[in-house]
Image (cartoon, rainbow, N blue to C red; front, side, top):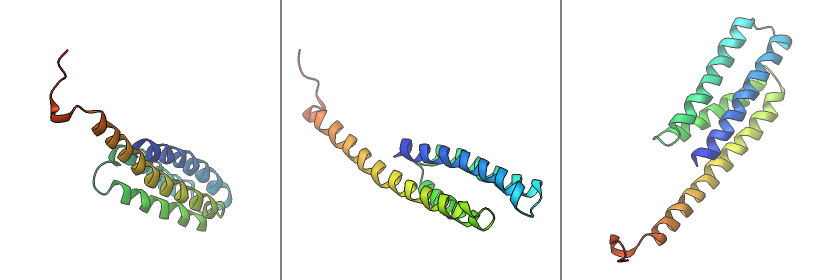
Length: 120
């Protein structure tokens, strides 16, 4: 799960940066405000990559997805991009967990019974 979710977060990192560039040109917000908000969101994307496996990591990711969609109030294209990335986030979490379960199942099947090494 971690790999899929981290890939989504890295993609969001770049999208947030580009949205910041658009917001500077099209909104009435100051450049300092735009880059403070964008910078915090970009740093959160990177930090979330490291805490995905900890309790609450996925929930923080969902909060970031909501913030991305809300970014549409400043850059209207973010409504669409935010929903797309929220879908990618859902898929990363859902299918990532299935992959993790399959890996654990295959590892358990490959392990020798009783934990003893075969005599050879």
